[in-house]
Image (cartoon, rainbow, N blue to C red; front, top):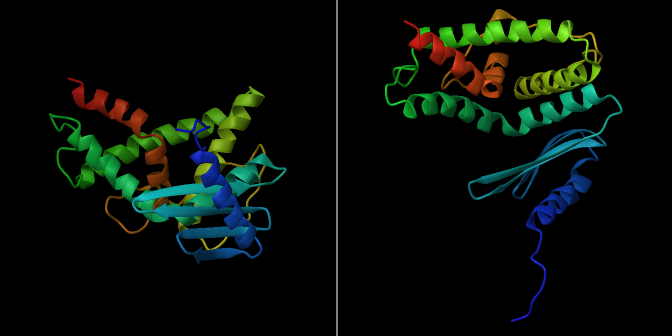
Length: 218
């Protein structure tokens, strides 16, 4: 048997997707070629999803000298290409919360009741308000930039699921997002995502720690 190095399949996959970019980045918008679905914002910012049976591999290239804009556009591309998977992830998190808790304390059933959706939304809303205040008053420049980058990424994902093109928003150290009340609700098995759904996925574990403590409180 000949000896040799094991092929680096991860590098092969990235190279395959990057080769796809060479053909897809020349024009803006969404395109499909074989098992690749791609979305392009401009000539150096785009992404592709490769579907292999039940596996989807996402690769995004987002280049901009403004890191906040790069994060936002990367999120926008992800939202465009993975909206269906994001919807399923939201619903699966609710299902998982029910299935892994033998006492089924929260939620008590699937689908979650309107009251349970409302309670989870309340906890997440309080956390989001606290997070915005924390960013607004943050004095550590490194932590501030990292938190803002995460915030821009989440907003970008949300916008990618509902908008035709990226929004014209400031990309600086002062901008903070605001949403309509309808965008701060939680859904289950709905066809549309809200920003709170995105925040729910991002903060699921922390939110359930808080909810568990409230449920178990005497």
